[in-house]
Image (tube, rainbow, N blue to C red; front, side):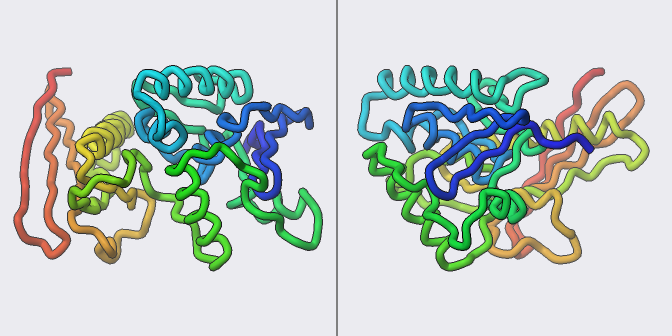
Length: 260
C-alpha cells in the first residue's frame, strides 16, 4: 500500500506538509479554510456552488466565483491535480482524494506525531469573517468537543442552509450488479455518483452514502433510499433505478438502456 503523499493538520494553526517534509501550507486564509472544508473528510464531494456559499456568502455571485477559482488555483499548486494529484476538479465538483492525504482529524497517529499533551483548537486563528463559514466552524468544533464521530459518508453537495424549503435525506445504497463483471459495476458506481450530484443540485436533498456500510439493516434516518441495479444484457447496458421511501412505500421505478 502506498503511503499517502500529503499530511493535513487542522488542529491548531492549519498546516499542509508534503511527503518530503516540506511545509507547503498556502498563505491565504481563504485557501486554508477551503482545505478544511475539503479535508473533513477527504473524499467528500463538494459542489463549487457550496464552497462559494461557505466562503463568499456575503459577496456577489461573480465575485465569489472568481475568488473561488483563484483559491482553487492555489490548491492545485499545493496538492496537484489530474491523475497524479490529490485535488480532483470534475466539472462543477471538487474533492480531495482520500488515498492521497492524511488528515489529523481522522488520524490519531498523525495527531500523536504532531506532539503535545493537549489537543489544540480546530482551525485555530481562522478568521475569514464569512457568516456561513463561521457557522460551519462553530458546529464542527462543537461536534469535536462533544466527542461525536464525524460522519465520513455524506456527499456534501449542499447549498447555503438559509433556504426555507424542506430538505429530505436520501440514503444511497450499493449498486446491484453482476458479481463477475467489474466493468459493469464500475459504470454503475459512476452513475450513482452522477445521480447523487444531480439530486443534490435541486437543493431539496441531503445525500448520505451507505455504499460501504453493512447492508443487513435499513439505513437509519433516511427519508428515501436509492439503489441502482445495472445488468449486462447482450449489447445493451440496462440500468434500473429503484427509489423508495424508507418505510417501503411509494416505489419509484425507472429504466434506461444505453447502447455499448
